Length: 109
Image (cartoon, rainbow, N blue to C red):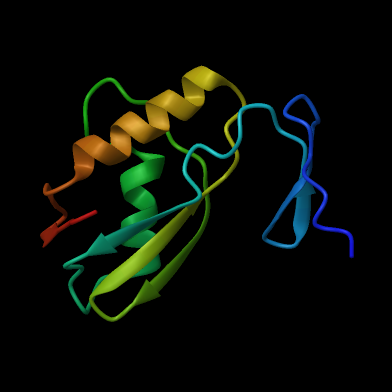
């Protein structure tokens, strides 16, 4: 019986995400991020605003694909990075948000 095929390290591959295929050398900046301690009256637009108009100095708007908002928490899904710099900036921004009070709610990532 034949075993599984193991790709060679130099082979490129496509990975499936959100019903479309990617062939992106940089990969997504961050696939998704969990935000906890979100007020129950918080709306998707409130979370989106944190990325459209970054609250921390020195950051440009960050491209968000979608937000899955639940009661008290949410998941933020980011669009794929267009460059290694964009990937690094997005990751740094999200890390710096951890534990900050934002628009009257505490974000815990």
